[in-house]
Length: 118
Image (tube, rainbow, N blue to C red; front, side, top):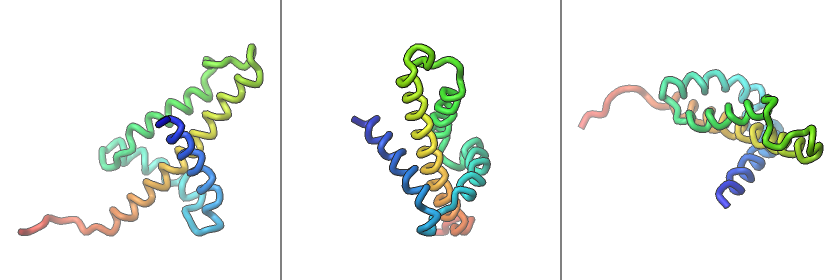
């Protein structure tokens, strides 16, 4: 059940992101440009997206890998369906995570560094 919810959330994020340009959300270009910054911030431990980035990297490796759980050669349509589902999940996840990262960056920019005095 939890996997289905995560999958539907990724698909919903993909649909939202594709329609966001018309509604004033982050453009696809802004999201793509945020990817390197998101990776750097995660690597430095500033942003908590490390596990999600690892899952997205594994999904990308699965899609481009010649080794497949459902091989296209023997199960033509089913072999392509698992790749299509993975690509759709990956696109939705990348779009959702970049939107989350851009919101994090905006909140972070509004914080004044310093220490709290009591």
